[in-house]
Length: 255
Length: 146
Image (tube, rainbow over all chains, first blue to last red; front, side):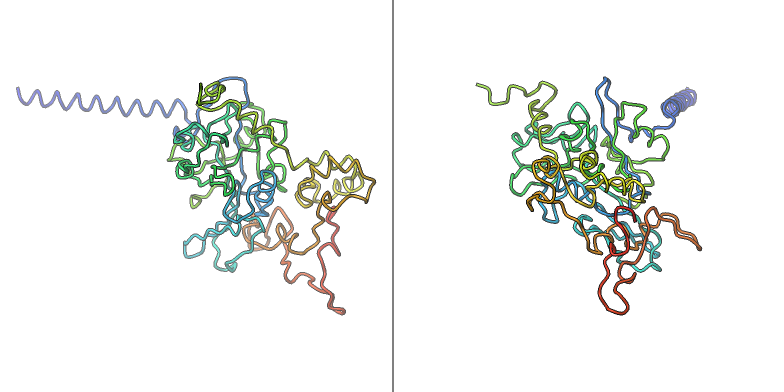
């Protein structure tokens, strides 16, 4: 009897195991092109739902985006307050990675490593990812930061108590405490511009068209086309932030 | 008496009025369309050159105040506070055109392809050979039609 029981247990264990494996395989087959954790869940409705595309292949690191952002949004000019900045990644022949961002790229870049030591080098413009499952809005104790119906993560300056919790929570380091207003501050995707039908300042001032702004709902928009034509990736996909900033040609070294 | 705003919770866990307050901010970058209204000849020049796709404000800076008040003045009589900058230094052109491996997008043994023309601004025609006077980039290259 004992022997039969043992076999039955083994059989049911294998059965359950196969069900689980089959279930997992089926879920991946349902969405064959989507890594489940990476793609943000799209809200229903007619309203626009904005996203961002950045083509690292086209970025020449001129810093126009960082500069125009500071001017457009009255961001303090000191070198440690940024809503949008550029980093130069240099991977050396010995495998080490050097990341530079002198003054956020505001004054341009100079190559600091001689050509012969460089394995590859590229610029990565950074800004708020406008996550659909953003950690920063979830931690706000007073409801001062929120996601607008258009999918833009904003801060209500009048409600913010300056507790800095959101600055800690953002995995991309996109928030800072405004030195004068003493409230958290971040990229608004130039909400005042996009509401008037204009492009955000950093997009309008990119000389090479490396930045693409668009509506993820509109399947004919430039951004959706960009996502179709390129192999895009978000930063830190394992954190499941639902980031809506998609990079083309993103190297694994970028953090 | 309510401590929270009346609009709190209208769309979500936040003050709905905040949306309009943020959207009401003034813009600083007016866009090329408003430059072209007056600066027609420059715009026509630019259309033909390699800088055709660049917005004017990338080099000249934010121009929304300039654009909205310039009409009140006779040309060339603008107060200094309304003037936009005309960058002339080598350093400014170097922001895009200085040699940098990260700007070279396809690298082979024989050719380097990049989206922009690259040059080492530190030794490319730095000064006149006879007079030793320093050259600016714009002495030879027309920035609107380089």
